[in-house]
Length: 111
Image (cartoon, rainbow, N blue to C red; front, top):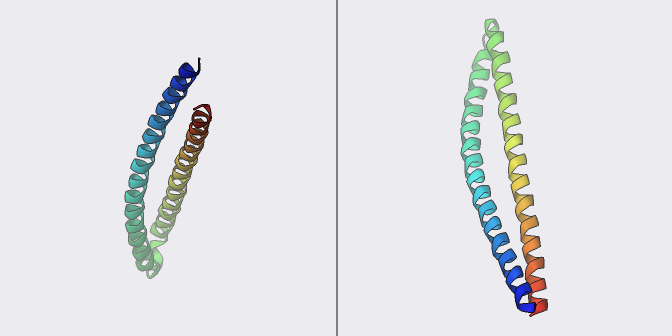
């Protein structure tokens, strides 16, 4: 019976380890995407800020100023959403790591 339980714990451990590896890979992939998007957004933000400055110099371009402000707010919102996704993946990975630790501890106790 003890051997079966050890095998079950080992199977659970390996399954959990695969899930953590998959989540870690996904988190790293999304972080890479987020970094890339952040760089693009920073570039777009700088471009928007330059354009905004130029447009402020001409009083007849108020419509474009409003559009750039909207774009800037959308960029900020997108960054917040990306950070939220990263936090979710980080939290999920930590939970799986904790569960793996508990399974390892139980496995060691049974040995």
